Amino acid sequence: MTRPRFFSHYEWWYHLAMMPVLFPLGNYFFIGPRYFQQLDTFVAGTLVVFGLYWCSIITLTVVVRRVIARFPDVRQTHARLWVMLLAVAVCTVVLAIVDVWVYSLVPATGVRFTWQTVQAIWVLGGVFDVLLCTILGLFYTFEQWKQNATEAERLQQAVLQQQFDALKGQVNPHFLFNSLSSISALIGEDNALAERVVDDLAKVYRYMLQAGNRPLVPLGEELAFVGTYAQLLRVRYGAAIRIDLPADPAPAACVPPLCLQTLVDNALEHNSMSASRPLVIQVEPVAGPSVRVSNTRQRKSRVIVTTQHSLVNLTAKYRHLTDRPVQIEECTNTFSVTLPLLETPHDSVR
Image (cartoon, rainbow, N blue to C red; front, side):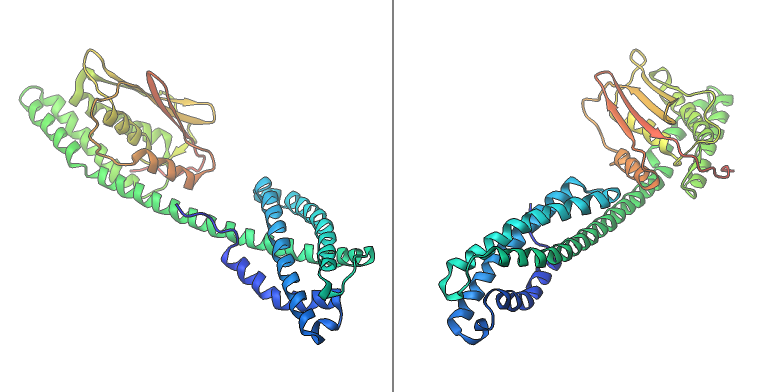
């Protein structure tokens, strides 16, 4: 793990560019024309201003970054600026006294400690403070912009990965093989049920193929799809699984397509089930408005991962759609995921 640099690339270039400007001006202010006329004075003054310059820059940078850490949000810009100016002004008052005192300790500079000199530095320091706060504020804004751009790109990649995982789920050969095996077994036993399973399978795959074309679908359609999907699971697992769905979803609420199926599959993937100990999955609307998918927690001794990072990708997709977070709660006996409901209506999948 690499340590963060104290100065960014841009800050280094700024400080290095300011040295040829500030060093001669500062020493001319302190020492006068002798700084350019006498070699020993020039060397002594340059060394002193070099040390004081970097000492001041490091001190002020630490103070400014502490203020930025205290007020990091964009909505705190005004508070951050005023506190930054006040903190830097206090530092400038102290540093000006130290600067004049250090110059007076070097005989070659010929500088004496006087309050008139200190007060003059306070005036010049006030101008420098405004410039420093402005420059560091711009650097901070630029760094935040880069971080936001990187985060947006990462979220976009996560969304694309989630879409890719959903596409793989649309043609999941394992699920298709199990469904066809169930149909084959039912043909000789219950033709009516076999026909219903075929119809349900067609509905499930039709929804999967068509829902992927839209970012959001009405909650009612997603629940209807999960209901059909649950019927296929009950044919496969019988009394070992129970999926409870709400009767009246919010009419205007929307969710990303296949999100509830992702959570149902996540429960199937990580939990064992049997007729004596069925896996119970409950889908219910909650305040927020949100929809919660919870299941009894009965972990498998060994989990075979079939949908890698499905829950992580679903969470990333929600971060791309809304500021409201996905809430994950894991208790001793239950596991639940609460998804925010979105308000953008979309045409129904046909």
